[in-house]
Image (tube, rainbow, N blue to C red; front, side, top):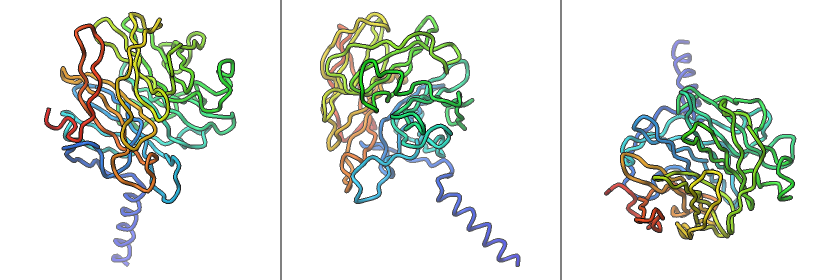
Length: 323
């Protein structure tokens, strides 16, 4: 009986690990793609207390289906951009009771000691994609639905476009005066101010006019310039615009990153970490039957010109392990 009981406990532990509730796993990333044991997409990076956290969708691989299958988000952390730790799955679309699936692009931001995760999901009752917000007390979670409802739904933007997938790819910026902004969009970019609680809008939805905008907006700041990078065309390249104000007007500056090999999409985040700037993106470099639907996160250095414009990204096989 004792042996059977021990066997039962062992089987439960195995099942627990197979379900995705794994312990932290540490590994060295000595080339691009950075994560080779799982397909990862739409990376969003957070710098917090001398660590980088990368939140990414998990492209699953059920051949021969050539479509996006993304049922959870993953999180990785590093203190040197080379040695990484994968942590247990922090969030799934099913953690939002009003959503019915699809862990599309997202971003985490910290405010007043709490971490707010803005995510794209398929709404369960309102047609189309929606944006939800989860919250946690630390960057690894556990994250829980912060509102009990979506903060952005497709019916809020029908004045501008009629497609069902325009309300995707949220990115958030907290300006120097404490005002937070939510940017998002597909085919049309939008922004709206957020209240200090980070889970309510604080004003109207404003369209942002950018040339050839497709999706994947990302905001960052360098010196006195704001940068709005985003995916253009299809297959996608990353272009960017600059402004002296977070609310624009934005001046287009050109292509930042070319088509990332074997991937129709191109989704970036840009961060400064320990006095160096990094461009984090995905490509389709790991051979799969899914091609563009099985993507992988990569990291390369980003550099500025004297006038504040950004130098075009050099995508490398080596990544940042030698920098």
